[in-house]
Length: 342
Image (tube, rainbow, N blue to C red):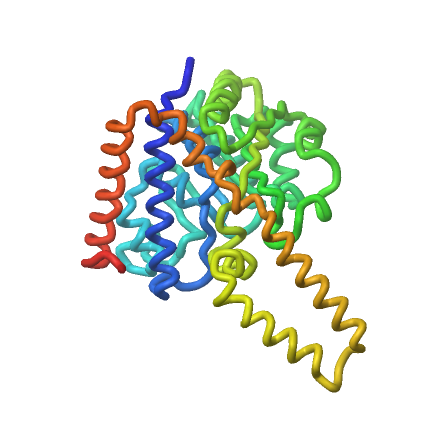
């Protein structure tokens, strides 16, 4: 059985356009607090969520927008929620991180690693109430160092709970690189807890679909949980407004803010020794130079572009789909705001 690339692309594109619209609202100050986007994860989410059916559940992390949209949660109520409006999915009280839809058996949380216990709970209920239904836990690689996630994977293996644990590995835990904070191999860690483990490049939605398909079939048949390790790149970093990305995109505007502060620090009469200040300056400049080689700058890591390239032989159908999706997002903004932000 092969995946339908057109269907996958439609799911991914809808999520991307919605989050791009939310980004504009955030920069205009209409969405408060931190904003964590799933841009760059769409191939992973679509490859898994497209195979869920009624009775299946999702436990999500703080980047739950794409999964909820792909699962069929109303986009208008979702945007209202981001804006803190009473008509939002959770009455405007959850923001973009703490989202719940009883109808879709979906729950998200900003607590790192909490998708594990939630999915185990969903799966235990499924064993009794919805035979052959499954639960999916989505989380980042940083969550793999949280005890509650490890305990959930162990429990799922012991009780053969129908859970697909999906690790969206971007190689970072906020602003800390995973290779300096996480020991060993994540696949081996999952296997050590009794789970079957697969790895996949998350930029390839079709490949994610294929591996997830075999994993989900195994889980539905009662053979126990599976760990899916999918690598990706968060195109906006951990959250919107990450300074290194702002510097990369608009160096003439952003670098003076950094340079002025650094210059004042170095020239200050009191404080640390000059040698220490210079060492700190070198460290900061190394980070900026490293950012110039950041994979987020490479279009090859964008799952949307990767999937689109495979569909370019039918430009007419592709343009019609993209125009329709953009019109849908336009209409959502009109419905929620009464106008489309400039």
